Length: 277
Image (cartoon, rainbow, N blue to C red; front, side, top):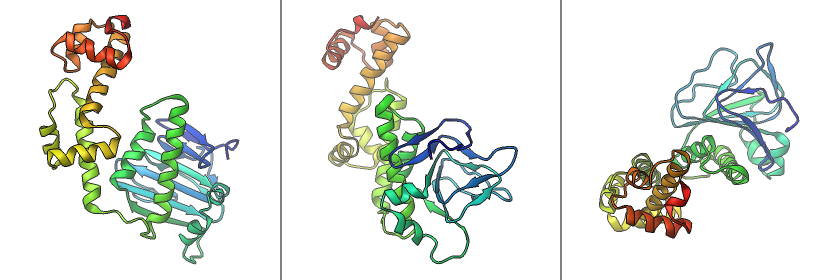
């Protein structure tokens, strides 16, 4: 619960989300060096970006790349070591019941007599994308907390129902999402490159028309609108924080004509780029 000692979190911060009622750790759950921690009944979920190992007495197992580790604890037990992950969630039993997921949680034990059940599930492209945004939210403040809460809830549902195969993942759709995400990341990584819809569609393995439709559905705007917004937002940050000239900022994000850049900038922010200097 929020007032409890949840241990330390390496490489990131631990925070409590009122909804769905969980601790989120960016890094790893770690027991006290002085002795074992006590894991209360609840659900521990980890999404690992890289392969991690498990030593003797560790409340985890080897979680390879693109895997989601799920540990359901029915009875209190001692945890001697850390549970590594890129993103970790810990839900006490009370939160699981408040979400109306108590029956699904108890189903994980399948009548086993042990106090804990450990599962390793495939992390779909969707789960990976959600975990990545939780690790590095694209927004700040209250918006970040709202996004974290929504993503945490989604991961909990996938963790509880994925084992029972009640969430069917279409491999073709999953691959398509990964390709769209890859294209989006390539645009983000090189905003100065003169991207065209034809080239982006080829990278995604789709026709021009299909790419436009699927990108719009996945991200809520067309690829061109997304690219334009990212370029202008980045240019604005360069003007404010690095004190670049308008011409240099425009060039850095792919605008070869400062006049075109100024027009697009004014349309997005309501003022000229020179006001940011």
